[in-house]
Image (tube, rainbow, N blue to C red; front, side):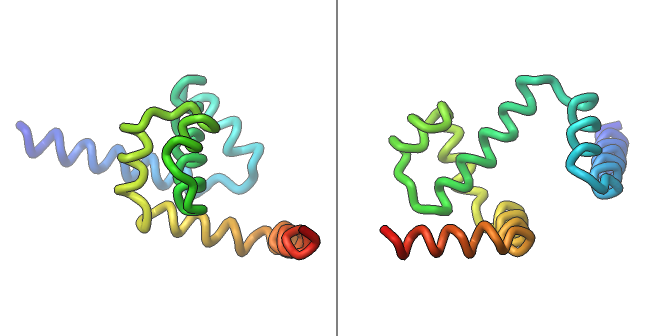
Length: 111
C-alpha cells in the first residue's frame, strides 16, 4: 500500500509539473496559481524566492529577515537548497531580462 501511495504521489507531481510547463504567459501563470494555491501559499512561495535571491546576492540573515519577514529557519532551509533549481531559475531570469542587467550596470558605474 505504501509503494502505491508513492507511485500515485509521483504521478500527481509529474502531472503538476507538466501543467506548469504548459503555461505560456505571466497572466496564465497568475490565473493558474490563483486557482491552485491559497494567498498564503503564494506569499510563502514568493517569500522563499526572495530569500534565495538575497542569499545569492550575499545578504546576511539579519537583512533578509528585515526585508522579507522570513524566519531564520526558512532562510536556513532555502540556503541549503541553493545551487539546485534556484540557480536554473535565476540564470534564466537573468538571460531573459538583458535590459535590466545593462541598466543596473550603468547605475553602479554612476555611484
